[in-house]
Length: 142
Image: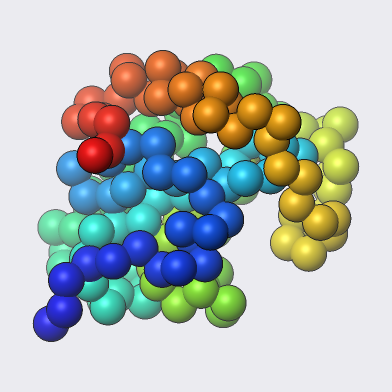
């Protein structure tokens, strides 16, 4: 099996914020929605059920911790969590904080509006790194 590499589309559309024990934590570059993505650092995995049982449980722990953090920090009306993978086959788990006032509410965000880049992506990434610092096992990558 080959080594883990972040899919080029995820690398182009996101910033790496750091790492949890299993997953990279990415910030999607769309300021319309608070949107983080977990990518398990396992090569050639497309679906959650293809992870080992231990990795499945770890991904669930990381996902729940991230969702709780986002919900609490942002006072989200709803947390949307999804693993689609139709366009990017690498397993990745979207975490989107939704608000009744957001641009797509109550519809799904996918393809609703073109991405609106952050005015200062570095500053947004730093804000998220400070928030994520409280998650067990989080470290800033590279």
